[in-house]
Length: 152
Image (cartoon, rainbow, N blue to C red; front, side, top):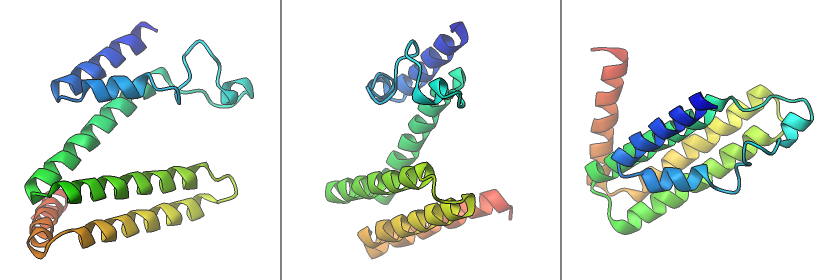
């Protein structure tokens, strides 16, 4: 319990230093996450339980994703309508990915294929939102990233 509390405080403090404390706090106390004192249906059924550090890791990953999205929007100089449309595309993709992950009728390979298709479609929709100049900037950003990851 002490470790969970420490990790949560560290994650919220880190997110707060990025200006995201309120969002992280709101998500950590959202009604979709049951309080620790109430067992979840998976725990009642003898299924896997959530690792105490997983909550802090999830908050940290969410903060990093938001930071990357904001940096990309700033570097591409997206307008407010573009930002709103990109946010809607992102939320739609996240919902489809969660649906695919939760579908018990799909095999692992089918889930991977559906998630890949969702990501590719979302990326194509995002690129269609951009102006030609913004697309060129995005291509430069991606090529630099690829060079960093694969080497010169």
